[in-house]
Length: 543
Image (cartoon, rainbow, N blue to C red; front, side, top):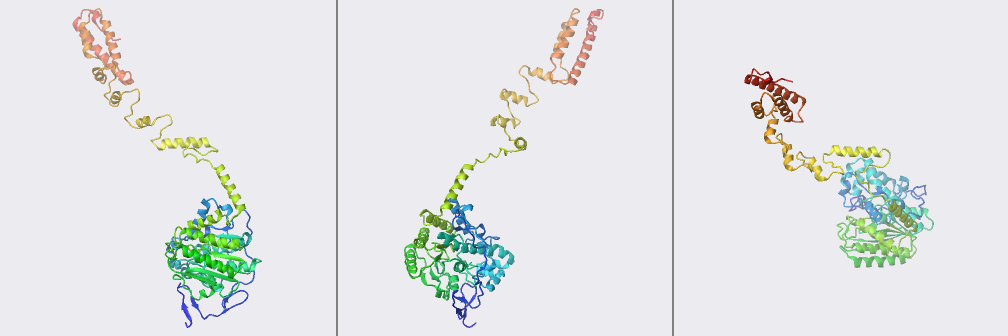
């Protein structure tokens, strides 16, 4: 096509011969059919004084199947910034403002219908976000997981504009999509939140007739520059690395104060350029509000920003810009914009804390509310319950008993409180030895040959036989017996039978022993009759 060229961000073909028109509403493209009339919106709403003019939503963060990791931008950076500020005790959910999502009518204040319709095609969103696999996803998922976080952040920047006019300053933890214009997106920027914010302010806030954009991201802000091309109501100061994306020569025409930097510039020269040019810009133009695009991709080590500014340099830069605005009574809106390293979130939070600690920004109502919340949390904090302790309340005794019974039965190693670990270990093993039993006795008791101390081995051996009478002693008694002591011999034999029987034998063993004794007595009686058959007293009577 004659008179046109392909832009280097591979987004949209730009026609440099396209005519523009200038009117009281600012420079616009011929085909732009943006919403010019003031419409009803939910993006502007009243905020109580006990909230910081700091805007954040957990839905800012982009995450879906890990696809966000295919882009160098940390799409969870905004949540990390909020987490650092929350851990520092500055913010809480009760003292932070949450934005509303813009409707299509809200977006038409800056965007064309054709551009908004183009976002219904996943391939176009993949080009804007620079994540090719997004083109393969159904568009309803792209709308929900990718574009909705962008819309919420745009709504946060719009609301931050209103808060800045009411409080003197405001910070949107997200936003800063400075590569997106009304009819095109690119560079991970899908909605022109800076343009939307300024247009909402010019339309709705009394006393706002002029605005200044201070863009200190490492990249050129070609999106808002195209939107406000030839607009005398908006002054643009842009400090960027001239050797990196987007190389948009057409958009550079809209810059009022252009500061192009060389590669790997360091703190002293950078801070000097920022301070001198901002002072000069504020002398040339007196705005009613400043939109500050505070990108942190100028940090040293950022492969896309290709500058060498230290974290301390970033903190000093932000402090200087805020001080310049607030000292002049100019409301300032800060957005966080680019930054492609994992430590960017902590640096942003450190910078915001520095502004608070130096009383450059303050909110007494929010500070008092936060202190009350911290005191209440400290007094209501209870020690964590022990795992074995049951929950208090109804049936707590039942829970306690059931828990102990389960733990003791389920685990064989359960040890009650009144049993030492040594005893428990012994009882759990078959070699357990009580305290009052020596190891020698225990060893004997564990074997079937156990012999008590008061029993000789000979008696123990005899005790294991079916008969419990000592045959040798019985023979001696019979041999030495006379006619006169036959009854005594019988009693002696019975006593030997009873005394030698184990006390722990069963009833069956006792009956067997008595039967054996009777059989032995009968044999002894026969022997006595053979010895003296004439004497009837020598006969043994079985009683």
